[in-house]
Amino acid sequence: MKEDMWAMQYYSILDMLHDPFAPTLEDLPTPEEVPVFMLASYVSGTDEASNAFYRDEKLRLGRAVAHRNFKEPVTWCTENDCDLSFPVTKYAWTANALIDLGI
Image 1 (cartoon, rainbow, N blue to C red):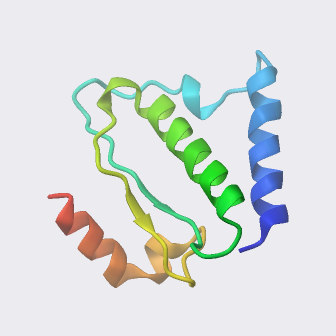
Image 2: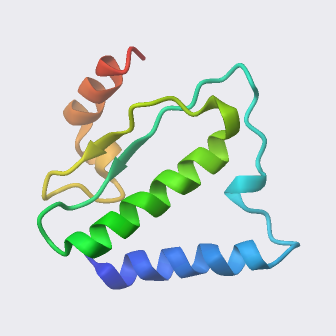
């Protein structure tokens, strides 16, 4: 896990939230009839405090984007090779996660 990369993304999003003219994910409308499921990743077993903070922030953003359409449970990829590209590079894991969600 590259903490500097996650921190850069997080603080970039925070900067966008403070700019009233910057479009953010939270401003995008999600149609009421579209359920929103979340597949997300983090590396377990490293720095648990930063992992907990990162998970909470990802979950908060996911819920904000989905508005009332957010569906539980969140499916977390905790394997060591999970990264931002895990839905594509870990296609078997992603397919199984989607099947488990009933998608």
